[in-house]
Length: 149
Image 1 (cartoon, rainbow, N blue to C red):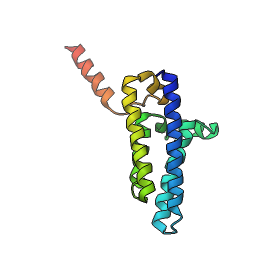
Image 2: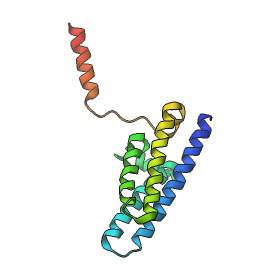
Image 3: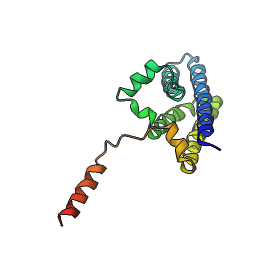
Image 4: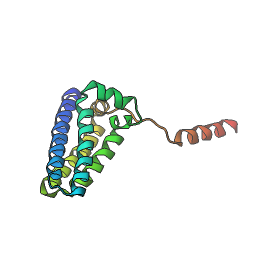
């Protein structure tokens, strides 16, 4: 399967899964219990953000996310964390939540597995992460140390 077709397939599947997550969260909020409303709202916001990132529309929201500290949602690591957080809440939302959470987990793991075989499609779906950690400085210090010998 070509990279472009594979990318389109995963975008479509992701859109459908995020729509299912959003519907599940909204239906869960209808219970009129305070904690159900809070959990449902949190899950709905997570799902809506990931839906917007997946379909890359509306452009105003995309630009705002890109120019903020929330730009991590465009990376695989960010999507993975957001999907796991949403899935944990979805698992508590009855049978429909369990189905939605299961599909979300299957989707994110299958994207990663297919990404190993088709890195070009994986790179079309996600941006490379920003390396803000200290591992680069340790490596550079180590190489400086090696160069001084």
